[in-house]
Amino acid sequence: MSDEAVLNTKPITPPAQSLYTPFNVIAGIILIVGFIITIRRFTGGLDAVTNLNDNYPWGIWIGFDLLAGVALAAGGFVTSAAVYIFGMKRYHSAVRPAILTGFLGYALVVIALHYDVGRPWRLPYPFIAQQGTTSILFEVAACVALYLTVLFIEFSPAAMEWLGLRRARNIVVKLTMLLTIFGVILSTLHQSSLGAMFLMAPSKLHPLWYSSYLPVYFFISSIIAGLSMVIFESSLSHRYFAHKMDEAHLNEKEGIAFGFAKAAALVLFGYFAIKVVGIAMDNNWHYLTTSYGTWFLVEMLGFVALPCFLYAVGAREKNLNLIKWTSALTVFGIVLNRLNICLIAYNYHLPADEKYVPHWMEIAISLFIVTLGVVAFRFIVTRMPILYAHPDYQDEH
Amino acid sequence: MEFYTLQEFLTYTKGIAYLLIAAILVSVTGFWLFLTDRDED
View: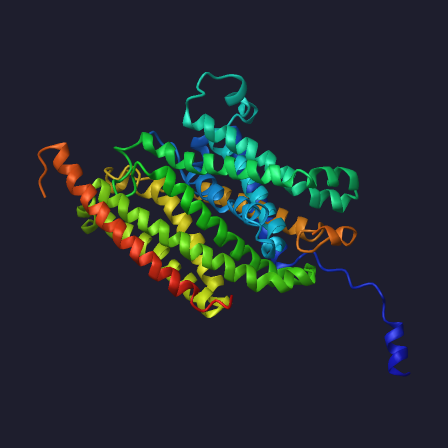
């Protein structure tokens, strides 16, 4: 039999992929454990699954899932502002993945909030049954609810293209600029408000982290988080979903990484500068020689100054690998900053044995929520036109 | 450093902050040049 004849006898459909891939098995175990703990949380209360107490009413569900989650979801507004408001069209292929990451990030923040707050049916209460519109938490609730809606609408054209809803998709696309402006305003408001929440705890938060500029620090660092997450997410997507990408995505990959790295380096420089000015304004220099001061220097030098320098070198030398690793370092640094403010440097006067250490079930729920996000992201990018332009709308991008 | 009045405190901290800001403005220029001097355009 000739080679051609052998080829012709091969089945034309690819062999079915096994469900038991390492990713599916690990994600499945995490989701099952998370589901069991979820039942325990909502039937037994906070005490059944957490180490929270009167000194620490906020644990890692707020420090990591909410504060870090919101900051890391900032890529959506940063990228869409760069492309649609500042006209940097060369980054256009980064918009949809960034919007999707932002949308999933905010959706998971809201889910995580349910675990901490409980009684989910009361979620709309800030809008219908309260008298505290001057509360900073009301501002956060309103902005997060509105911005999640904005992100959903911004993401919806991809889903509509997938579902073939051409007319609805065309209407939503016409709203792009309005939604982008709305998204930037709402993000500015609630990213800074999350920092402003800690202004009510000047005696609890260590002076090196407490500052009247906390809202500014939170907002500026969210821009860094957004830029770094776009680079980080893009490098992972290129590794695992390269087969889903069209030529534009593959060609623009390096330009996006270099451009965003340069922007991140500059913003990190500014962030480091205003943090130093903050120490000077409160005359907190003497705290730098304490143990908390050492930890503060680790955060500032290891996760702000170092990534700033590495991003700059990476953008200058066009070193994509260095930029990828720096984005991971920066993302970790932002998470560390939020954990420092919410947990580690919080109640700094308490003795070590009264400090909060998260229960393993709190960590499992955080892992569960992150896994939900990864699974949802994977589901969407393998089906909808996120990493490629839909063939019916090629000319519109 | 000991402070006896708010004015003394503000004079000192603002003085340091202004010096820092001047240093930052100079260094950001250098950083920008470092960041962009190999750009093609």
